[in-house]
Image 1 (cartoon, rainbow, N blue to C red):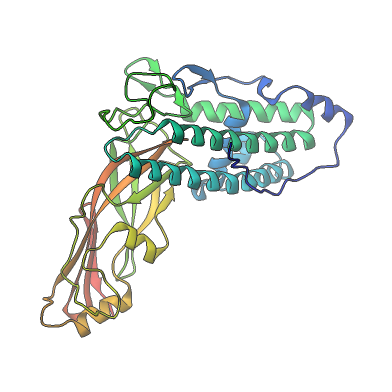
Image 2: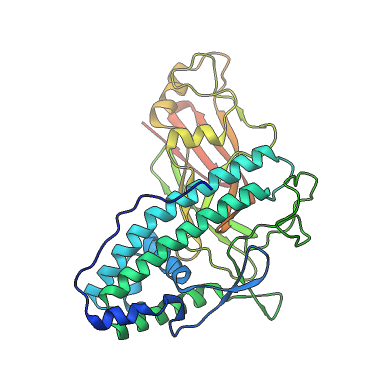
Length: 374
């Protein structure tokens, strides 16, 4: 079996008392804290472990919009909270590495089975290994925290972390039934079948997601420094679910590209493509995913030409290019609805225009900003 264990710096704490040793003898999962349930990989109801609740707390702390707001909610002193933040930072590196690996596996499996959104058995098994590794990393951090804190403070922190998790994830759908948070969210094709089903899922219809996904995304303007415009977006659904700490990605829609670029000419100095794509945009900006922050907001998504490209279009365009010209690309948005399902939830239209006098316009999903640069 291939190992996905990632190298991490493990902090070893030497200053602990005999009482603290007795405190960690009991499994962390047995802390006196609320125990919510989640959907297991076999679609059965299983308990959420305490380290998994800490994973949520670590992600909230690592969200840029939530820096240091947890100290009062976790009832920690400044020194105790510094310990918690150190664990959160270490876990964040492991978390990001494993999420990236999961995304790679999902994309490869999608390419192999292009007609279905479900994952093959082999992909599910690989993702299960990665999630188990992440849970082990979280468990190590919980044990490290417990080694330093006295038993009473550790128990209080466990309860506060569980309360934080319950507040974020125990929402209600369909009237009165509680939403069970889906840990592995891997549908076998809508029938709730076992993991012994055949590997080939290509003849399945795309099922509804078995975990919480957005049904709406609202784009708003964040900044307009020209000629690139910054947008932010808020995702939501009718159940009021919370995706803080989850990732969203931008990708090209499946199938043939239908984008266009009337600003293109052969030999242009900026290497603008005749057929633009999100993959090329992300390659040039270095940004293709965002972390959802408090309030289900993510961003900033910058749309627009670079200053040099706008200048070159206006100054150097040949007679074959008519101003105002338009660079248009479709942006498919995906959400990490839970640990092992990435779901396509929104298709946006991005447009960039260039005109005489260095006028520009950038739009995302119908929200536009314009100006004159240079």
